[in-house]
Amino acid sequence: MQYLEKAVEIAREAGALLANYYERRVAFESKGEFDLVTEADRASEKLIVERLSSHFPSHGILAEEGGGHESASEYRWYVDPLDGTTNFAHSFPMFNVTLALARGEDLIAGVVFVPLTNELFTAERGAGAYLNNRRIHVSSAKRLAESLSSTGFPSRKRQHNANIYFYYQLAMASHGVRRTGSAAIDIAYVACGRLDFFWEFGLKPWDVAAGSLLVQEAGGRVSEMEGAAHSVTGSESFLSDNGALHGEILEIFGEVFRGEMRYPMPELAASR
Ligand code: IPD
Ligand code: CA
Ligand code: CA
Image (cartoon, rainbow, N blue to C red; front, top):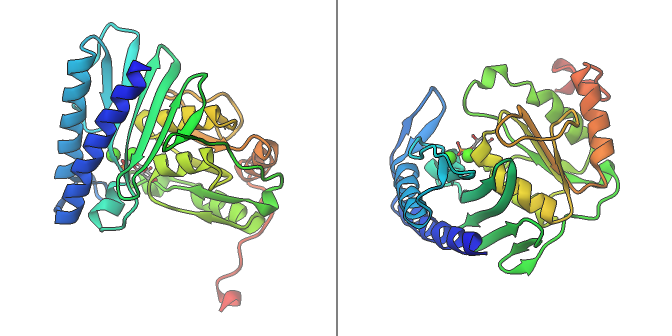
């Protein structure tokens, strides 16, 4: 309990800092050709790492901007000080701060805080998932054809990403596929039933750690996109869903992996 309480306190403080930078509009720099970083990412990470280090000096910290440190402890924090940096840099109001704690391979606490809407998603292993202290559950959708989902496309190495094929097939087979630009929000939305499922390739541990626990504690499932067990540090693909749709999603993903397109893409000339 003590871990989650502290994580919430720190996420709220970092969220307030982000909201302040957001109001003032900060300049962005490029980490890679299309990969942005701002002063807000760094200031938020500094605050979070300082607070975690002072409360839990023996714990390890893996933080996106490199401010963390390894440790001999079996406890390790995953920190994304600003998830949705591209949105943030363009004043598109969809971003969050997220922290999660693992003991060995097991996620034990997770927080996603969305400062602009003041929405706090929390989960502790075995104790359920909550949005602003009210218990949340995944959706009850039973058919892919009636689902709403979300996915993401990376900023880095985007030319190697095959997700557009998955996007097209799933968009054709369902009510729609959103792209919010913030993976941790997408996953938290699966946990509270606003979305039925979410998938993406190439996410990092800090993008998915808190969300994985949220979805599992909300009664949903987390796996790789081919169905294997998901590992926060070792998996190349991520799928979270409401459980009921898991089989149908894996079936259509399997078709795309094999190059069998259920819905052929239209010829450009014919669609004009
Ligand atoms: C990104 C966002 C985005 C996802 C990218 C992530 P960042 O995180 O979560 O939605 O599509 O793959 O890298 O860089 O804004 O922390
Ligand atoms: Ca991120
Ligand atoms: Ca980030």
